[in-house]
Amino acid sequence: MPVPTYALTKNLPDVSFDDALARVTEALKTEGFGVLTEIDVKATLKKKLDVDFRRYTILGACNPPLAHRSLQNELLIGLLLPCNVVVSDDEGQGSIVAIANPKEMFKVVDNPELGSMVGEVDAKLRRVLERV
Image 1 (cartoon, helix red, strand yellow):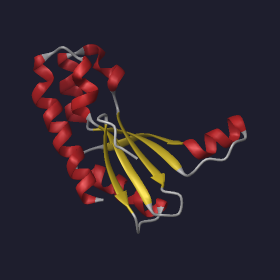
Image 2: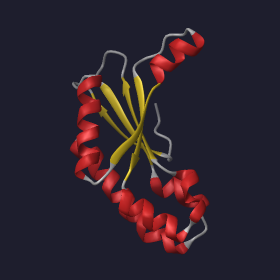
Image 3: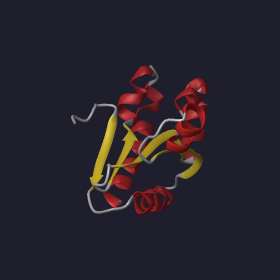
Image 4: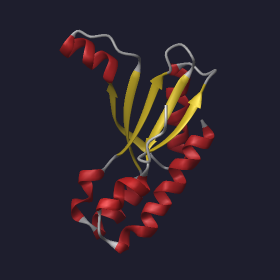
């Protein structure tokens, strides 16, 4: 499956979903991100639609200093926060980690003051992928 430009991804062929989720959470912490939200998509779809889906969790990750600086420069940037990170089961072949590509996501914001911050966030999130 081709990777869309809005995603940074890493396949973890020998890593269980639970281990991948733990690794991602720890790697985010190492880079100064806290997990504000954790959405269990599989459970939600089962409850709301009574359909089965692979294990799939969306983490809403926030780096408070960077979020604060961003909000000071662009009040409505909160519409694009927090950074979304997906951990999904690869249907018996390990796990997949995907992170919303900040450079693509923030293209819609016409504010040059955010350029260096977007680069900082991008570098941190790429290191998260390297660590998992």
